[in-house]
Image (cartoon, rainbow, N blue to C red; front, side, top):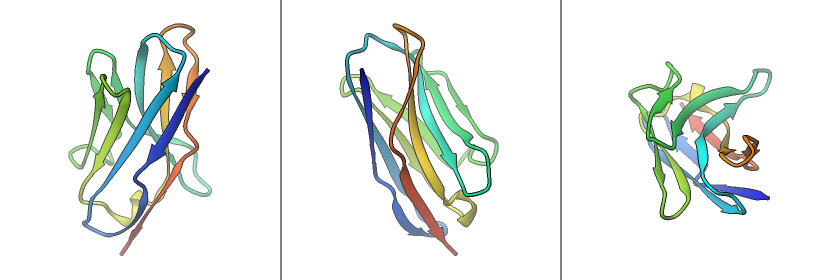
Length: 117
């Protein structure tokens, strides 16, 4: 079983920054990719940023240049640095992890990010 625990959400003014972290624990041996999704009421879940085990990153067009995803392999954490935040970034952000062992996707409980104008 794999557990993901997110932290770092909160309220920030437009133009500000937040840093989300996700700690992965449990029984696993490697991963194919990790990343962040977000969901706002009335909208489908959106992929925000992902990073593969080889360090290849992929960003949604709406966040490219403002957000940076990174991994600390020693600590089994994935981080999302969010700069120049805008009200449209307001959402619940979820960390995700795909296990190399069984190709299953695991999700965190979500952390709220609110950007005020």
